[in-house]
Image (cartoon, rainbow, N blue to C red; front, side):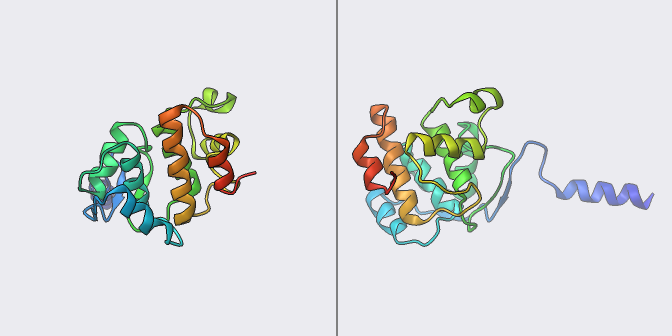
Length: 175
């Protein structure tokens, strides 16, 4: 009886199935213009998940003011973030999550593993590194502000022209 009561209590504390876990979801995203956002972001030692989602919204041309939870829901609906992830507005964005979001936002079609298994943080990162959108590094490492600005610039060029120019790759410090 106690076990059943405990199970019901614990189940009621969890998010409904399919709903993402979002910590600090009411945090407001400032909705700044792209120049102000990029200038501020470039000086940050790490990019938070909230600031990273704001960058993806800017990349997609969605600059309205919104909360972190609303941004997560919008990006889940557009299949740019995975609904299975847990989200924390103030946690550092990993290179793997950033790669997944850019891969999805740019509608990139990947290699064999991405085709067979579907997008994952690890293989999206490898694909973006191969294409010159991201520099080498591990998927669980945090993204710096300057690095994220360079990634967004390359992703924007890819979305507009279908390719990333050699100048953009060189300027970002890639070989």
